[in-house]
Length: 377
Image (cartoon, rainbow, N blue to C red):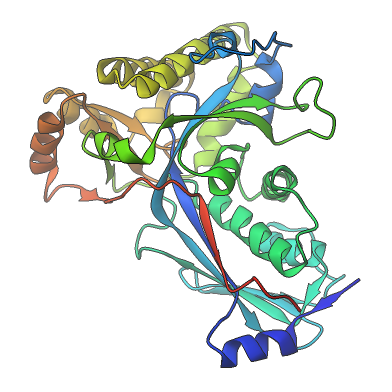
């Protein structure tokens, strides 16, 4: 049944209360790329799940990703549009696509418009705007953040027909299948759940729990909000100045999975990701750095070009007791800098000033915020 929103949104506009979702980005680290379909499915094994295990040692050989939610991202607002039509506009990219529901072709340019059609909305234009100018994606998962944000707002306007996990699955599959990017479920999960969260992936659902499926994970909070400052003083994001297509690197990693050498290298990732998880949980910052270094070295062996535009940042970081990790697949140009000692990171900031642009951030406990949708059409 079509949800015609034109009149409803005209009233909302008059009252300055247009429905809106703010979707936040994530910092990834050791474990990133294990959320891609192939890696989730290749390395998953049926586990025995104990009832009481704070360290979650039983997960150390399962694919996982740690997400750290930060205050960059995308604002998505619903505006009234011509009755019977749907539209999606991007402020940063200066693009707009419009169609009649039922006539949206499944091509890359229409990926967000297709979501509005899936929810059978009409008379609405979604307008997307980055929370911070000039950042674009920067390896922070921007396209996935926008996709799941559109799913959340469309779901709200349609009366919440889908669960959170269904939204994660929908967003991931739309983005991947329409060729927007090679994606898994980490960014989508981050926007839904937020915080500093360890995701253990269950690509076919949690055993013994009916109703779960693709997009499902077991989730563990690693750092509580009162300790976010401990992370913020040890982490910084700088831009290398050289964005590239992350899909090229991801495709190289996927191809490597099909070779004996590549498979063996990829199979080391789960243990390193677990070490990263425990380093954060126990606030053993030296272990965090070691896991970042190990994971980066594995990735570089799998794809020689991975550090192509970040090598100078790494060398300068290491000279000051810090380390570097290209975010995402390194495509957006954003590079995480980390040091166990906050003072060393401050020294590095001074060293890089004038040569590289910093992307400041704060850690957030929520992955998204919804406004003006407590009422419905």
